[in-house]
Length: 382
Image (cartoon, rainbow, N blue to C red; front, side):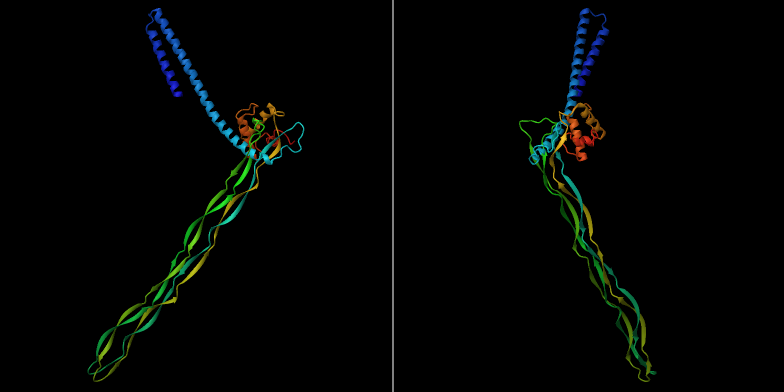
């Protein structure tokens, strides 16, 4: 919209420049021509003035639209708060207890109180780690028959032949292999805050109230809050399995007598050979190491008291002046809740800043209570 208006103004300015240029180049024109050009120039000036007015109007509308959007959001929040407070109206006393003459009172909503508690929950179950300790081996010397005893004849020597024999070199054994445990993740939903309902009031003294309809109470249900926690559980426990290792043998060749000597027998003693044999000293075994359970701490929010309506001493039209509102606006700005204008008028921006301050400080929300004025140090304890 702004771009379109600026473009129209630019084109009008260009036409005026051309018109003036025409006048400058024709100074010898007749009076009728001069009058016609002056008339055209006046019309162009009028068009430019009209377009500038439209531009200013459009900019004001845009600014009002932005402000009204913020105000509409605030009014919607106020309507919801008033509806919630109206639901609690039936449980509050109809008149304030122990009133004083000349003072104003209003039923204001006191927020519910909560308490955070910590709880320790199981995150990972206890388990075992199986450690396999291998077998220990050693070498032992053993004599093995290589050649049997024989006889030799002095005249006709004996005849011999060769045969093979399997000799045990390494005994059969086994080893243990670790099979690790298997785990799985499970999700568990934990209730953090149970579902509850609260009553909230509809209108306060600062806002306008329809006296024909009276007060409105609304019961709001706040859903429960949950948290999903992952925990690791044991699916299959760690174990071990046995693997057999076969024995090892060595083939030994030995010389045997085929035919003895026939004349003189000469005894030839047997021959032995010492070999090393690997033997198991200690068998393999398993050692179980306990892994303790793991826990985690979660926070739960528990409600201690419900929200309620209470009669509180407040400022109203009978005891509230422009000076008090100005001091209230200044104090709100100094405490980080800017009401935008310091004008002594209780507008919607001031109301929004006041309620934000009351929520931040845990005060009753909805009206200008003396408790709020004391918190802002506008008045002393009364």
